[in-house]
Image (cartoon, rainbow, N blue to C red; front, top):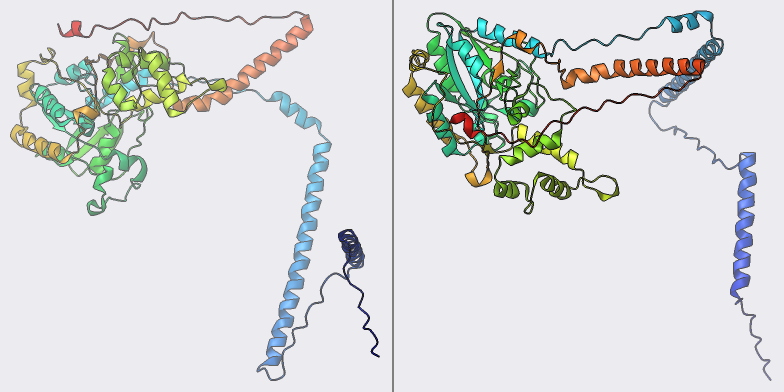
Length: 527
């Protein structure tokens, strides 16, 4: 009879029991690792890399290894000594700081704050002096005009000062013609050509601002990208006319014009590398600069012409030599929008219909995602951006030439200015440059219904009552001294108050706001 087979005990267990066992195992291993770390036994023993006896040059290899070991030890010793020296120096410096001497206290008391110096360099008087220097020294004067508003960028006083000199020539340069429709450029060339010789020009502004190399590095015309606007037009025709005027002797050519018309960019284009600083900020050029184009022609760069306060408010903003931070950007934007067609503004900025300028700025701020706290649109920031685009070299707008010519130039003066100038050659060169430029279509540009000749100031004595307006570059240098002086005054006032036991109240003066709602009748000047 067979004995029955006994079944083996099952190894199955409950989950709670299995988890308890795993937990105890983990705790035990953690405890072992902790003790091993305290004893230092956790580190793995380094493998002894031995060189086999069959290896060639075994003795040389071992010798090199010993030398390397010795060098490493010497480096460690030197580093240790250097660290000790640095720690000792730091301790000495800290001890000196903790024990202030009487000499330091005396020096602190003797320190004085620098007095605030007025910005004389960038005052309007200095600009008048520099412009007069250029007009006196130059044989040929080039008045640079903005093709978007040629009449507004002309200065009557500067032209009269040049025309009064019998031996000087006055030529007009119509710059930025790539921002105006082609038909409008031709109309302005015909209108201005009835009075003075006009040269259509387009500077290589985009290259000069970012990618133009420094002095001494010329641009290879074969490597120029046409789509980026790096090619200039009208430079060859301008040089031909200037060479025709200096057949016997070398001449000096002076550039005059209002701010942001492209005087310095024109010089860089003729020179083919950067010799003059250019920028979107007004008042970049402050003094007269001499640049030799070749052996016969020397160009004199001048700062901006000073605008007379008798001009309309739109002209004062667009042609002023300096930009002030306390200007009312909303008022200036309102003045510009009054003279623009609403439909073109809506198409250009992609905004719906608006009732007034404030509503337009509100819509533009929402369109560009500019908000203040609590979700309010930042109208001031948008107005600043709008004005920067309007004053920059990208926005396309144009003005229509008037029906009648200006009255400050006679027929005799016109004939004198056109002497020794080949007008037929000039017309043909202007037509070639106009064909080569990519002009915007009238539907993509904004018509600006305001065109008025700007009155300027050339005499220093006429601006005695005006305050000096420092530029943006000098404001940053004066801010530190100004803040220090104000802090010192506040501390002195606080000491006096504590001594007397009285409280003082700061007086606040409110200036009357300028009447920005006045409309200027620009048609009355032409009638």
